[in-house]
Image (cartoon, rainbow, N blue to C red; front, side):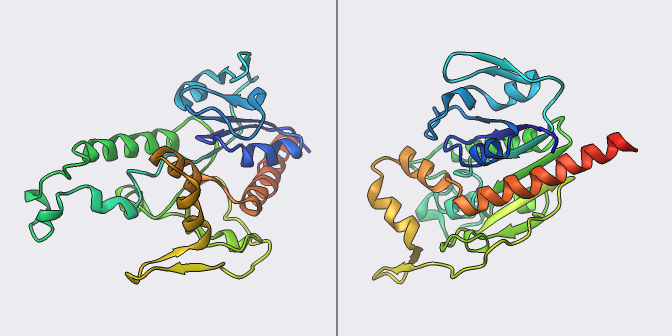
Length: 248
């Protein structure tokens, strides 16, 4: 099978990158955070848009790598903190909840939240419009569903063998929807006295992490079965498509 140049954008865990590497592809993760996946030699520790534009850059281990040609495939996980609907309550002052949106004050703890949302949306669209022929962008349900367009597919970890719930939207460019590989139960939920329910994996993460940054990293990690399906299915699709184009 053809070896692809694959960029896994905004991924510090390297779960998707590692799955592509296991299949023999020339895959790299990229994030402003150092990688936690154990392979700094596969991790661009710099701005994703620069790595896309330049076809490479500086790895976490200090080496400089540039691919030949351009990226064949990008799987992107842009930060969702300011895009997800779950964070909407932090945009406006809690005392203004009964006022029209245009009259509400910023939240006192997060006065720059609106600008952060615009910056996040602009970064998302920069990834979507990158000069790469095959692109997948994943994010939870959020403002991009209406700001840009509805996702092409919505998946859960339990569609790919991991007993957990985490609704994930996929926006696809020249890629087919993923096929489910192993549908299992949706996992446990924890119900609090307030009536709020959280997936157990997420609730466990709240107790294991200490800072907002650690919690964001915990939430963003890709489940193993999902990562494997991404690499196997989209890797094969893109490789077969490029091989077919060459043979015609």
